[in-house]
Length: 285
Picture (cartoon, rainbow, N blue to C red):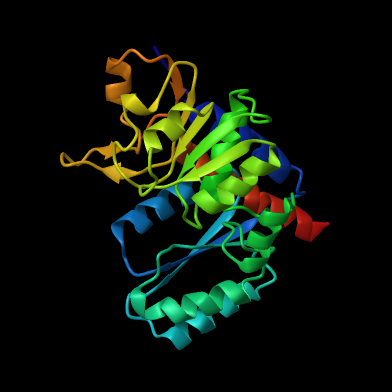
């Protein structure tokens, strides 16, 4: 039997905490700037959703949109203007940026004010995550995995976790967050030999490879917790994860699993709001 670990209850809990903190701000409010280059439909959809949700928590969200062909110099100028603006508490960069801004993006991460880097992309925050610094901002998706696991009372300390994925957005920072929780982490990827065996041997399996249906019934066993971070579109245009939930359900395996959609992704925006609120609170102190 499959037990779904939905993201909404965890997201709602974080949302309520953020609202309480903003209400205690005596009329002031956190400010987030979303910097987007071009009109990528996925970026625009996320921006619209995030703006609506964060605004509903009392956070002031401002969008800064640059043209797809913006020059590297103009991009740098606009970024630094936001980065140095004392009224701004957090900055979210919609990535990936266009290829012609690759060098500008590298420069941007080095110049980023770490206290405004609410999605954890600059070296200072990434180094903080490596050290286990509780004040360092982790990438929101990686942090969301921890929040949903702990939100359902799943113990991490002493557990064996197989993590499939090695990106700087999820896999690598998430491995550090898991170690901080005293989990024993095995990092795998799509090229790992005996991947199914590595998953079966774990107490918790986290799939973040960006490979639709990678984890099937042969990868799992009764009693496991499965966290699906994958966001993929199948041949019929449906949003699916890295875990083949239908195959696992058909096999009758007894597991707890986060759905896609409705799982980790739901928590990510709430974590973004929490990070903006944390940056705002720290600045005010």
